[in-house]
Structure formats: structure tokens, C-alpha cells
Length: 148
Image (cartoon, rainbow, N blue to C red):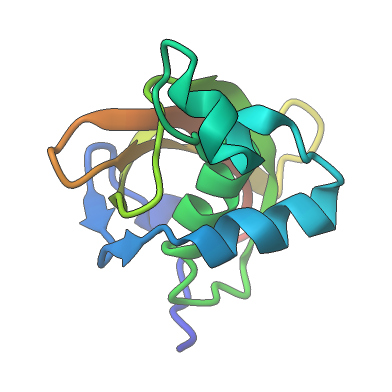
């Protein structure tokens, strides 16, 4: 769905929440294949059972990519993602955990070089089924001004 929003249309504090998605063993295997990260923390259940973690933990980049993907429900032709800042893996995610993503517009500021655009900062909070934050970051958007 296309939703047109200009810089002026974003309101500090506005938020949205995704549906949940359960992380599966298939997610672990496919992500390991894509990234080449086959460390035992993610892939070896027997080894993990001998460690303090007790069970396999999801790749942080898997949690990030699925969590961000859950927010991809609209296209804004006036905005472009310029990246993510302050990314933190707060708690482990395991096979069978269900994650959802809550986003909130945290900041708006002028772009330092493009007067025709502004920067919108969206706080991203990925939570598990116990409502615990498992990943947090900031998503930065370059957004056109209405009269830019």
C-alpha cells in the first residue's frame, strides 16, 4: 500500500505496532546459510545445552531483519531509509519465541545539506511474547518537505 507522507506530516510520538511472528528452526538454518554464520550458539543444540545459555540463540541479524521486515507494510514515495543507528541486542531470542515490532517517531530535524528534505528518526523496539525488549535501534529516514 502506498501512503504519501511529507516531512511536515510526521508527528513526534506517533507509533505503530506490527503483528507477531514466531521464530523457527528453519529461520536459523536459512539465516546461517545466507550469512555463513554457523557458530554453535545458533546451530548446535547439544553444545548449547552445556553452556549457560542452555539453548540455541537466534542470530542478532536474524532478529533485526525479521523485526524490521514486520514493519514493511507501506511504501512512502517521499521517504528513503538512510540506515540504522544505536543497534543493540538486548535479550536473546530462541526457537519458538514470537517477536513483534513497535516503532515511534522520536525526532525530526533539518537535513544538514538538503534544505528540501528533513531527517525523521524512528525508535524501533522489537519485543518477545513476554513483552520484553529483545532489540532496540533507531531508523533514520530522509523525507522530502512538502514545498521542497
